[in-house]
Image (cartoon, rainbow, N blue to C red; front, side, top):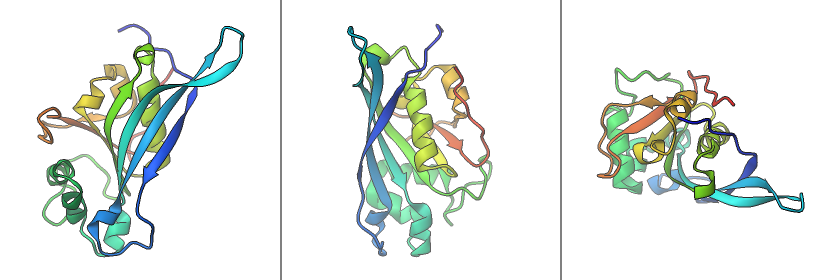
Length: 195
């Protein structure tokens, strides 16, 4: 695969979440983030400016807050969508603990799912998507589980998947269009997408 350059730029978040304090309503424990990716570009006159280069939709499960309020994460996922409930049943046992055989640290805190991604054509041959996933993971879930469905991972190079520390999980049926997931545990992986 040809060299993919890094992109200078920024992320702009628009988030939808209920106001706290949280109750025992399981619908209150998932935040939806719409993330706009902006690339820094130089105009013909030499001026710098940002242009929209892509977008992500990220779901953040506030599992610790749910558990502190005695709301099972299973109920949170089930209340949100079939996709989140399917993800939960693939990763957790009936007690809500990570299934045996998954190579994750038990002390994780938080779960984010990069539900979808769209990169503008001019930036598809750059590291923009990998950079955005790394930034979102670091900002929203520094000690948690990062879930990337295959539909998003297919937009990354194998080197970027490895650099992000994503583990290819056994086939997991979440949607017909997303038969596999990739997961990273921020507690035990020291990722780096390199230059």
